[in-house]
Every structure is written in structure tokens, then in C-alpha cells.
Image (cartoon, rainbow, N blue to C red):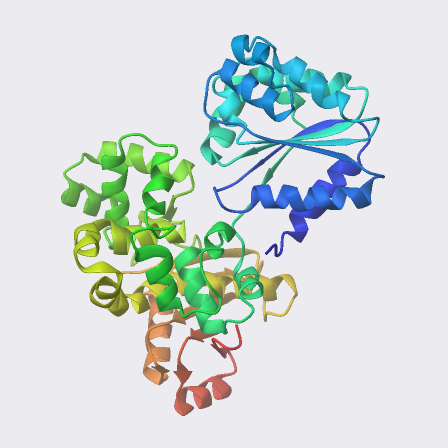
Amino acid sequence: MFVGRKKELNYLSDCFRKEGSQILVVYGHKGVGKTSLLFRFAENTQQLTDGSIFHYYAARPCSEKEQMILWNRELGADTKENDRDGQEGFADIFTKIQAKASGKKQLIVVDEFQNIVKYSKGFMEAAIRFTKTSETPCMLVLLSSAISFVETDLVPRIGSLALGIGGFLKVPEMGFMDCVNYFKNCNTRQCMEIFSILGGIPAYWERFDAETSVEQNIKKAILQKDAPLRNEGEAIVSADLRELNVYSTILHCLANGLNKLNDLHIHTGFSRAKISVYIKNLMERELVEKVFPFENASSINAKKGVYRITLRYLEFYFRFLFGGVSSLERYGAESYYEQKIAGELKSFHQSNFRKVCGEYLELLNARDMLPIKAQKCGEWIGKNGAIDLVMQDAEENNLLAFCDWEKELIDTEDLKKDLKIAEEARLSADHVYLFSAGHFSEEVKTAAAETGFVELVDIDTL
């Protein structure tokens, strides 16, 4: 089921309406929905023009010769002669695509195009020449799941040919509201739990059954022997990285709370320099992020240089599966879930609840529904606690948010503790939002009403 992506579809539509031809690069994490986005857009192009022509090719990691043989086959030119020599160039392939246009504007999509560019020097040159000289206008869209390749390696690899690329579109993960719309039969709590485990990756959502409990989905889609997501964590890391032993060690540490450079050094025995290099590679692939204290807060009581896994399912995998493979094999999905996962899920959801609350506040901010118009956003991780979200306007008025998934009841002591953390961060608590997956005591409701600057938000409001 396709949901969301209105902004991305509008961008593609605007590009398609332009006169002439252009090349776009569209990229993002594997499974985030890039191909589905282009398929949906291809359907929409019928409304933009009078019968546009759509061509799609999924590039494989193979030699240039083999790539052209495979592409020719998909074009219907799978003659024995083509299979024998594969000497046709990419320019000839584009000519064949153009011949099918019949004078109508073309939408040409090459998926995982890095599989061609890495092994062929002539592809980008042929593609740019084609868009410049094609008698029939076209929009050539190059898709890629290799974020680091697009952002770091592509331009140095192709040089001045990069000037022929008309635009870059980065497809982000889907948001929590998209998850709610996708799992229409689930309540807010269930959607939050699903989003916490799978993140905003639609390809993973498809593996969960909306008619089944989250617990049963974990067992069926993740833990069972032939489960589709059982080895997905390893697949994510191995897709674009070597020395999996080092990367897996670091990710396992991060997923289990060892999130500072010195912690990693002491536990792994790797040098700090080595860890920094490997974390840099993970950050370039947007698998890990470095968390800095909010810039206008105190750094005295803050934790500095904290690393965090950004891809939610990768965090779930390295926290619950990576270190327990032996037990999972021995005892099976049912027993393993009860022994290793059930009791830890609340604390796991806690770290991800912050992201859902942040999306909620960003939405309100965009609609001018907050008491301030935030221009800066961040967080503050202190030695005695954290401010999950800090939002600040141009006059440095603050909105501080504290998110609690684990406690059943939030009381006045929790509010006092949160305000104490704000003092340690040296941030004025001009407005405070308390988010809870549980309930608020009558005392804290009264205190919030009396102070006038405390807002209480339960999970149903989200």
C-alpha cells in the first residue's frame, strides 16, 4: 500500500513539466520506497502528459559487458549475437529506448545506477549526451540506495559530467503519521511500537500484519528461522561495507549503551583512531549519528560525543538478535522472545518515543500551533538525565520536552526532576511539554494548570 510522499511526488511532477530533458538523481536508504515512489509517479505522468512512455531498468553489480547484455534482453533484444559479444555501448541502448517513444515524452528510470557507474566509465557520458540530443524529451531518473556513494563518491568519480545532472532528491524515511495511515487497524500505541522497531521503512512495514499483535509480528517476521527480517541487520551492514567484524562489534556496542568513544575503546580494544574512522564510515551511510548538546545550553553537565544508531531496525537487530543467535537457534522464537526481548522492549521504545514526540512538535511548529515559533531544535543529554527535545525561537525562548514511555504514571516528582535537569542545562523552562505513554496523576494535572507553562500530552493525543 502506497502512503504519503506528497512532497516528493510534487517535486517530480514539477521537473517532468519542464521543457526539454533532464537527469535527476533520487536516493535514500534501501527499502525507503524510492522505486515505489517512481512507479506511482509513472502512473501520475499519464495525467501530466498525453500518454508518456515509462521505461524501468534495475542495474545489477556486474561487468559493463554483462550489464549491456542484461539491459538489451529486457529491451527485447536478447539475440544470440548480443549475448555473445555484448559490444553495444550504452548510447545504443538509449537509442533503442528512444525508438519506443513514438514522439511522446519518456520517463526512464535506472534503479541502483551505482552498479553501472562503478564499473563503466561511459555510462554517464552516454546518458548526458542522450538527454541533450534526444529528439523526444525525457526525464532520466537515476535511483540509488548507496547514500555515501551519491553524496561522497559520485561527483569525484564522474568529474565535470556532474554538471549534466539537473537535480538531486533525497528520499527520507517515512514519518510516524505515515505509519499510522499505513496500519489503519492498529491503535496509536501499536503504531508507536511498530514504528519504534521498523522505523520509517515501508519495505519493513509490509512484513508486519496489521491484524496481528506486535508480539506475534516480531516472532513471525523477525525471529522464526525463515523470517524475512531475521538477517536484515547483517544485510544492511554488508551491503556497502567490508570488515564486518569491526562494524558489527561497534554497532552491537552502540545498541547496548556503549555510546562514547572511550567506552568503545575500553570494551573493544580498538584504538580510538580506528574507531573514529569506522564510525565516520557508518555516519556517511547514515547508520550512525553523533549527538551534540543543544548549542545554547550548558556543556558543563552535558555528555559530549555520544553516538547513536539512526536506523531503527538496525538498532533492534543489534540489541536483540546479534548477540543471541545461539539461544534463538536452540530455543526457538517463542522462548527467545519471552527470555530476551519481552522484558526489554519498554526501554527500547523509550529511546524511539522521543523521535515520535519530536515529529509531533515539528508538525505543530510548522502550523504555528506552539507557544513559540521555533527556529532551532536539538536535545541535551546530561550526566543526570536528558532533555529529549529543545526548541528555541529567535528571542531564545525555550520549549523543553520530556518523553517517558516506561512509567505508567507521571507525577509531580517527575515534573520536579525534569525542571531540575533544565537547571543543569541552564535553559529557562519557558514552556514544558511532558509526553507519556501512560497516565498523568491528578496532582501533576493540577500543577500543570496552575503553572500555565506545562503541557501534558498522552499517547492518544499523538
